[in-house]
Length: 224
Image: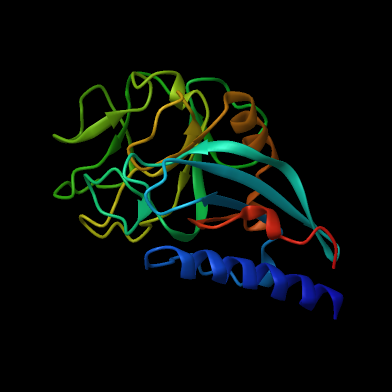
């Protein structure tokens, strides 16, 4: 009963975040009860570019904060409905899939590759490799980001699976990565040490999720 209560309280928080933010699809499909790692990103208003990130771990019947709240940057246009070419961070609940970085694997259990100047993320909606990692000596399309040449913001990063179906134009290349102190193009960005800690903590067997919305992430209960 206590576990169900804790999950219900977490669900209520996530619902409040989604209701407070502009409507958006939520492609994460893992049942709440199967996730034991959860990251919550909250901003004070839909047009805000700064907020906080808190990481929670479920231990038995308890949800406990293991990192944060720590300052986070979001899109230059705040948070809202996703779209390619719009510097807005998508709202909703999502999973993580691929981690990467210019630096060696910090010890994450997530799939991880160390980038070189031959690593790209294809953001061309007309490309057959849209919204995927491509490795090769040439830019794979007219709109592709070099994951090494983009600089220290990608020292450590993990892809937020906002558009795993790769629907053209919906959105591509939304990452959790290192901040440079400025609003992002749609990603979520935190301090370098914090990003490294998040990667070391993330475990695919825990079905980790991230919820992004308008509201306070500090309401997740620390005890059932």
